[in-house]
Image (cartoon, rainbow, N blue to C red; front, side, top):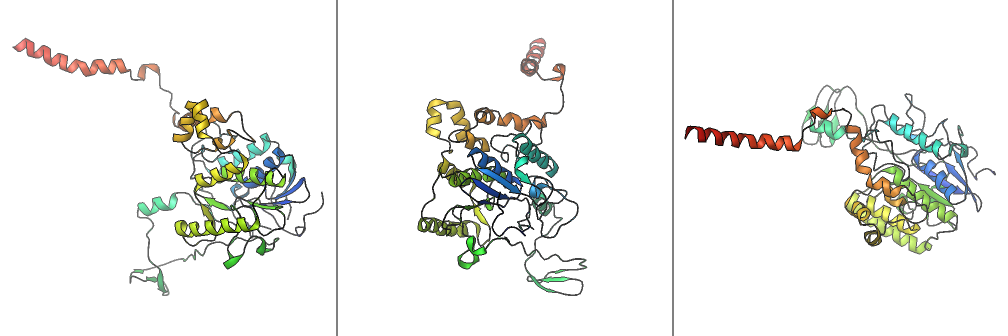
Length: 389
């Protein structure tokens, strides 16, 4: 395989932000073997493309591959991280978690799932490990901070007016004494050191990508960014659907609008993002709207009216139930035969981890027995009344 242009001396890391670079008509280079990278490998294979993935570390998982020591330029989770999306909402759409897996997982459980996915889908042979720098990314948080605030262990203050030698003075006049350390939470910048930033950024240094995936100003659609969008949902199914769309564009089975049409769409989305989410460098969007939009591009959006006509039980679960990832492998190209059963049994897998105590038959309550107990008291009261009167 020929070397990637401008990438010979680059450093890579397997993170959610993964770049796909089409080298020839059928060969695709994938940077990073994190969640997005694995999704990209699998989707390229589904479209008959030839993927090669370049991973900085010696394993898959990207951000979810925990390390107890820091590495220059490499983002990582911390030891106590748990997922804040349930397992049924953050799986690969054709690869449910084991039934007894906790609904909210420690990062080690998620990493185990990611490795199993890569092994079962035979993706490891397409990855070149320990290749070269990094892409920076946003930190990952769980629900620890809000709970600490509610418990009063963390307090919210206005902006800092000034620091003294051992205290902080806030704009409302309050003072916090005996400070040991100060952390400046200045945030993160996205950095692609191997890529000309004008390709994915334009006016006002904003990220400019059609549907958060394709740079609109390129002559040909040979580059896609997977996993950069911050939707109000889980990253894994989002990356999977993005990668399916990108692979189809690379395989010429899907076409993009004109450059002007893409730019008009980006301008419209930027206005909505500013209104709903405020000023931010991230590409934030609503999960269900975004997933339906991507699904419609490749014919994978669930057809609810058709489901009501052909499978009412499934239609009710899809329409009134959660927007689980399995829905986007239910029909169309890339459909999974197990999607229907996965949707109809998702509540069983949700409840399963909580049913860890074995209760014998003798201890289980019986409705008929409970009814007799309820009726016994008024019967005894009636008998006593008749006895004395």
